[in-house]
Image 1 (cartoon, rainbow, N blue to C red):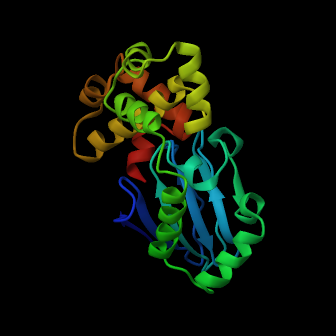
Image 2: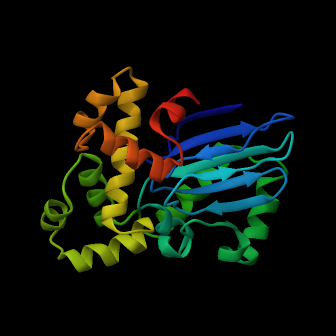
Image 3: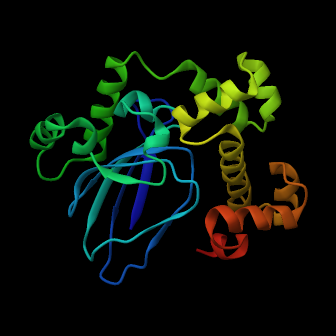
Length: 229
C-alpha cells in the first residue's frame, strides 16, 4: 500500500507513506534526482540519496514507511552534505546529524508522520537560507527539455562549472539528470494514455527504440513491463 500527496511547507516536495504486506515483493523506486528524509518502523530515521538507476527496496512484512521527497537540488541544503556523497545510498540520519538525530527521534516519537518529517526538513531549509537558486533554475530548465548547452548559457556557467555544481546539488552531472527528468516526462505521458511512439517524440527521444533502451537502462525493465506494474 502506497500513497502520496504534495507537501504544503516545501514547494515541490511530496509526502508519502507505505506499509508492506506479508508477501510484498521488492518495490522498484525509479531515479528522480531527489533526496528523501525517511522513517522506517524497523530502521528508524534514514536519508535516501539520489539514485542513478532504479533501486529495489525490500521491506519486512508489516514494515511501515513515512517520508518526504525533496525536489531536485533541495536536499543538500536540508542535510548539509553534497548530494554526490549520498548517491545510490541509504544512510542513517545520525551518520549526518550525529546526536541531533537522536534528539530529533525522541521529539518525533515512535511513529512520526510524513507531515512531521516535512516540518523538520522545512526548518532545516529555512535555517540554511533556502534552496540554492541555481538548483531551482537548472532543474526547471532540464525538466522542460532544455539542452545542457542551453542550460549552461541560461545560468551563466561553463560546461565544467555546471557539471561540478550539478554533482553537488543533484548527485550527478546535468546529462544524467536530464536523462532522468526525461524519463519522468515520458512516464507521465504514458500514464496519461499516450502511446509509446508518440511518448518518444513528445518527451525528446530519437525514436521509440531510444525510449525503450533508456527506460531499460534507468528502470531496469522495458517500458511495457514498467507501465504494467
